[in-house]
Image 1 (cartoon, rainbow, N blue to C red):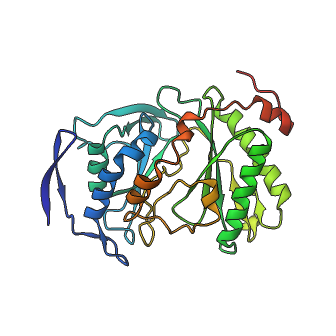
Image 2 (image 1 turned 90 degrees about the vertical axis):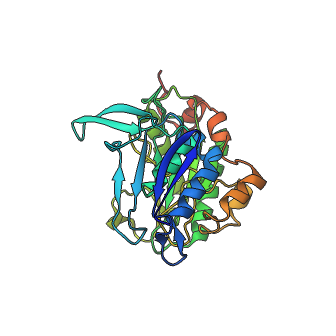
Length: 306
């Protein structure tokens, strides 16, 4: 099927090349990607809504060349909203696409946008992130069991600080841990707090973890990445598809599940049945807003000022 017209959310547009293979080993097609994003839209949109989003496009599937799309293309339909933000790096305004409805996701999937990477802050408070994130990034020498061990250690450190955190698979080899916050802390304050937690965790398990940024100096250790907590930095969204074998999805987990799963357990073929059965396990990330003052005091970090 080369081309067809569809109507989603009262918006009509054309989609094309639905039979094009995007995941060669699995025979998943561009049509499968579009179908997934339409079906998962009630769950993923809340994590993209009113946030600048960066997309990764794979016009020839995951084995072909890819590129990042920040700026909305000139042919963007008039019904898709954008948000303009000046970029010092490029010296111009970037028109970020706002994902507010399923039709936008369908249109983006038709553009071969596989990954959805939202900012940590929303357009109404760009300088104040809604969560702190810890990204556990293993080296080739680490087992996934070691990633699990580190995730549970991060969770326990947060608990000792009186904080609640929420895990999801990265859709790759690691795990992401989100700490929802009251959004009146600056990125630098949140990053300094995340650094304190990461340093403590690495001090507890120096045998398998590090906060060393330089890859060549890390050795066979899990990188506890707290540097994602920067304005404009992005992390793949919950329920985002990843360009890897099996079409894995970044899947929210309960802490009880963390020790029971593998990073490839959830994909575009089973994510929707799971979320219909288990519900949206990540929703507390948008609701459970927490303060950092007491935790910073316990860590011995400087007093936060607002």
